[in-house]
Image (cartoon, rainbow, N blue to C red; front, side):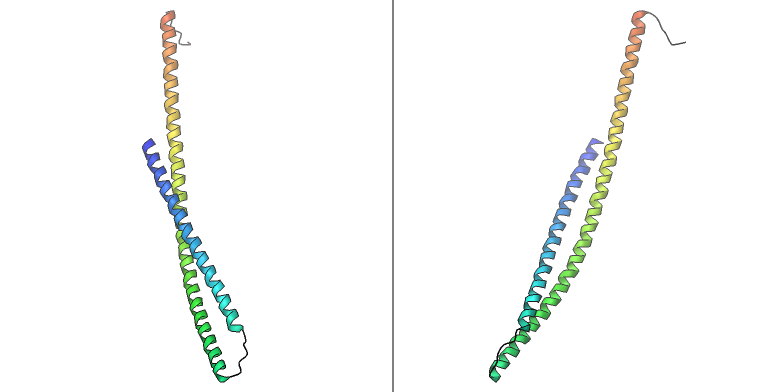
Length: 149
């Protein structure tokens, strides 16, 4: 029983490590989503800036610049959606790993309770044996056999 509990504790350590790793991935993905949102906000602000254009060439350059900004913004929006989908998937994985860890902890707790009950029973048997030996010795030494009847 003791060896099983030791193995289960090692497995619990591995599960806890897996939970920490997945939590790290969730944190990384959340930071990535935050960066995409910040990029989208910055690109939107740049797209809204009006500049003074006095020549057709300047107007053309500003239009090209804004078109490029819009294209970059659209790309960032697509990347954000993909990052959010990945974040959802990783969060589901985290929940599954956390459930597995919780189940394992409960199994270990139950095994420990059973083992402790077994040890308590063994201890009680030893105590009962010692008490009966003591009674028997006392009976033999005194030469009488009181059975209580």
